Length: 560
Image (tube, rainbow, N blue to C red; front, top):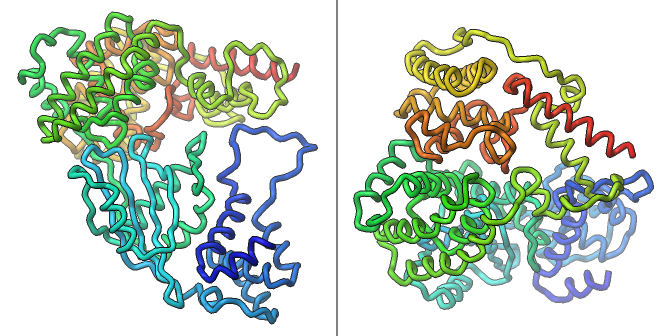
């Protein structure tokens, strides 16, 4: 209550609005640890309803002020109606701006963008009644998945904030431009939603404490704007980049099969992650590639992986030349390769986790050396591993009744495939069948046929685009192989590069097409390490047998 009194006496709205936003953040379910397990004796987290009721039941000027602020920030009409009724019955005199918060407007947005594309700052102008102006400053990070990484609100008008930012960011590679207010709303909203699904969450001095305040302001902007659109690179375009690189002087002395295969990996990373531009490299992108992505994603011998930094240096020079990036930025990006190469070379020569275990270890939910049998501890990794098995097959009920009968030899389901794409689908089907007949077996052929039918009927237009049948077929087989732990990093008998070689492609040659097919089939294209298709229909008997064994193993550990 003392903090509320100080905020009311301050005369500026931001202090009270920030305090109300912080209280709402405390009761926001998005802030809870998804890996935390609670016992029956644990006290339930405070809810927004309980917080609101506590203020409704105490008739004080401080609670009235908080109710007025919360009534503006929350996106719940029923709760707002309760607050209006309660405030109408009270006699406290509140500041004029607080009683008229519903008159607040947001009418202008500006974005600050750097040429290397790591992230953007979005500024939104806010006008409160009584002549008070504020500005939202939101940083959206593209390298980590186009997520809201930080945001804050300042009690200064937008033009004044922009003047300060231009003075601080005296950089020819950074540009400021007006952004359609509706687009600002779409971008900020999507980035907040993506960030809220990220664990561990991003936390700063102001974020996510100001999230309810920012969300309220963003709702004042017009709807219908466009969020960030990830560029979709067709395989032919990526192949064109590769051909042009190999023909350039930047590739002198590097043209051997390993470097050609590694270039496919770099193009996979560049087109599928970060800003989605394989020709744009920054020091941060280099760090993510060498410290995490290659060691976790690419399974190959040390001699092969050790060549990546050399190729990366040449490719960065080529890309920055193509994008006309200033030489000083190229020097900084190349210095990042030098900085992280020793750590990278050590990592690829060391035993390391991959897939779900790597994710759990990264967030502190899994210790491979921990022999502790205390499954009731918060964040118990056994429960998390059971959850991963449920995702693979489509839920706990399916996991309970899962069997390991071989998939049948079944025909392709043509019934729902539109006539306009049947010729293209037939070409992909024939190549998938041939791959399964020559490299795999009948069960894989059935699983690939089922996935191809799902994609063709789920979003037929993906087959109307110009794409080589070999890329599409390799993508189908790669998805099914990954879902069934076919590849060597999970104990399988095959390397990804061997599967790609069957189709005449490099190791990353089908990655972009695979992401397109996953979206078309209704699957999540941004899966960490593994490949969960959510149904046993796509899993061969060996994979289902291993899932059953792991299910029984983890459940027996829970019971001890």
